[in-house]
Amino acid sequence: MHDIDDLERRGLVGVFVASEPFSEAAETQAGALGLDVARVFVAHPIQDRTDDEMRSLADEALDALTRALTSTPAVTQ
Image (tube, rainbow, N blue to C red; front, side, top):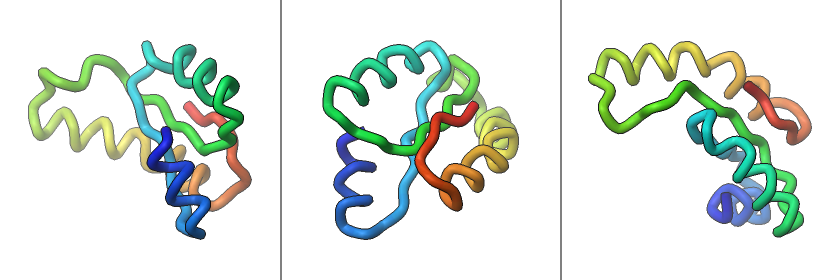
């Protein structure tokens, strides 16, 4: 989340991506730090997925990522 905030402060658009179980923690951290960065949450878990499964997750998140990159910061799922 800090990386996306740093990129945006430098004028580069970014999106924070995490798996769904971390959405509440991300919201809490963003609020505590005063960060208004775009966020997209994907299905969990990530670490044990095959390459094909990861490509499928990316495909499923593409629309949300595109919206997050082209609109005002908002949480997207």
